[in-house]
Every structure is written in C-alpha cells, then in structure tokens.
Image (cartoon, rainbow, N blue to C red; front, side):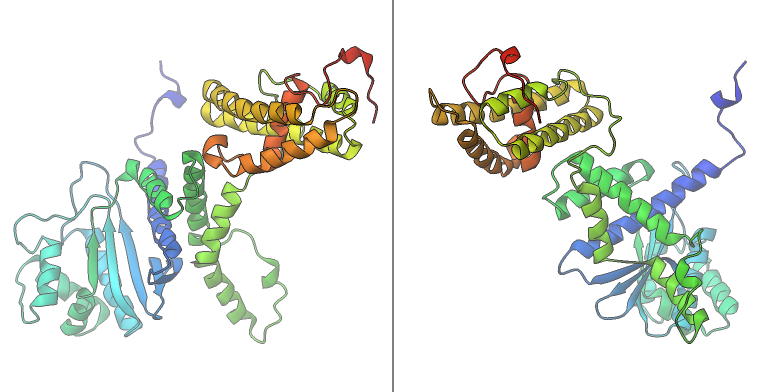
Length: 411
C-alpha cells in the first residue's frame, strides 16, 4: 500500500500555481536584465502594478505586460480564450484610465498563439488587421470580443480598437522547463565577466526571488509606516508600497554583486574540512618562523589557509570531489612552481631569507590572481592560502629544510 508521501495529489493545484507564479517572475527577470543594456529604452520595472509588469521607458511612457501560461498539451491560445479576452480587456481599461501614457501592451504566452488560417480565432492576424486596416469589420469571434469589451468599459468601439493597435504578442518564449536556462544564457551575454555557470544560475535565481518579493505586498510592517514624518501619512504609505514594487538598474546590480561576491572566510567554524587538506597550522608556523618571517605575516598566513580551505569546500559542494580535486591540483601546481622559483632566487646558505622569499611569493600571487582563466577566479588572498597549504604540507619551505621537531615556534 502506498503512503501519502508517495502519491501526487490530483485535487491540490498549489504546486502548479507556484510554478506559474515563478514562471511569471522569471519573465520579469528577463525584463530586469534588459536594464543592464546601456542603450535599451527601459528604465524601471514595476511588479504587479496595474499589470503583471509595468515597464517605464526613458521617454516617460509605459509598456504593460501580461504573462499567460498553459500546461503542455493544451495547445496555443486563440482569440476567444478566456485568459486572452481578460488580458485584452485589461489593456483597454488601462488605456482609458491613463490616456496617452501607454505606447505598447505585451501579451506573453508560454504556449504560443494559434497562427493557422486567417480566421478571427487567429489573434495575431486580427490584431494586424486592426493596425493596418482601420475600416476592417469583424463578424465572428473578434466582433464579439470588441462588443464585450466596449460594453464592459462603457466606451466607444474606436477606443477599444485604439488600445488593441498597441498590443504585441510574444508566444515564442521558453517553456516552463526551459526558462531558467534561457535566463542564464541571457545573463551570460550581458555579464561576460561572470564565467562560472553556477554563479550565473545563482544570479538568476536571486533575481527571481527579488521579482517575487517585489510582486507581493509585504508581510511585515516597516518602521516607516509607524513613524511617518510626512504631512500626509496615507500618501507616504502609498508611495512606500509602490516603491517596493519598483526595480531599477541599481537593484539588479546589487543582487548580482551580492550573489557573486567572494566570501573569503567561512561563515562559521563548524565546517567539515575537505579531504586531503593538512589539518592545523603548527607546521606552517614552525617553518615560517625558521625563515624569520614576522609574527603578523604568519598570523595572516594562517587566516589565508582557512580561506583556501573554505574555497575547497565550496568547490566540493558545487562540482563534486573529483572536479574539485582537479581544480586544486592545477592551482597547487601553479602556486608550488612560483614558490620554488622564489625559494631558489632568495636562498642564502647561512642567513635567513624567508622575508625576501615571501615578498617574491606575494608578487607572484598578485600576478597569478589576474590570470583568472588559470586559477578559476581565485582572489589574491585565496592564492596565498594555497601557499599556506603548500607550506603545511611541506612542499614549500622558507629556509633550508630541517627536522620539524627541532624547532618550537610560539606566538
């Protein structure tokens, strides 16, 4: 007998509703990514403000956007379908309510629009007729739709036609399962500096969450609603709600920056250490002290080692142990090569040379940090952390090698 957790519900549509909402938000992310294009006309995106999305253009006018979804297999939308009729009616209503403010309305569908014979059920065809043949008369589905909208809003037929002339259809958008991948590719083109797929995916998902947040009224009451230093608290509260719905370029950049920011140190000390990493830093301390390297530099080297260990944790989590090991082997080779070069260049037979060697190693790591294609984007501090790992593993020395038990470093 199957348990409740093993059977999908046939009567609770909540998961499908959530998928549709997330798909709508994903389309909103596409609109927000347009803000990154320097010569794009879009300036602001409002979420769930009069429309699913309201795009304010640089000329001060607006584009109203509605996103309609259907399950796979239900076929494309036709003129007389209820979601289409509701969307077109809403477009007309907005055009009447805010005259001369909208210059375009966009109806988006994940299932495309019927484009068969030149019938009135073919929405693209009839909208083209409205735009190009002002005296065109309709007798079937389109006539019924126009009459229905006219009566609902108590307006003239010409007002309906004027609004419909502004409607643009977008039916070739990605399907449910393709939307995230499509956004990742768009983000990659707009931000070529972000080369890691995981980072692009993280940015897209963070932006989806940002759009979902802007699309919903807040569940908590901000302090500003309690302490409004305005002559009209009601107006101030209204502006706060609208501001919550608005996304501008600065917001998009902030989400991307926060998502891709490199966290050099782990958020806590409770992380499990990656495999094959030397534990502790006591060997590092002894070897650097023998090279007469300063206590502050040794302390920094220990923190840098922690940073490198944390980066290895992130690689293992994102790519798996095998890929993480391949990355580490490459970085180790690059780092060890430069450390050995610095050792040979600075080695003195009867005098400490650790400080001079460290200066050369630091310069080499700064240069290596600029070669992001070789070091997987590691920062300068992280590369120094790999130097510390190399020291702890006894691949790098800061003096002539010696039996480690002969020296006791205390700090």
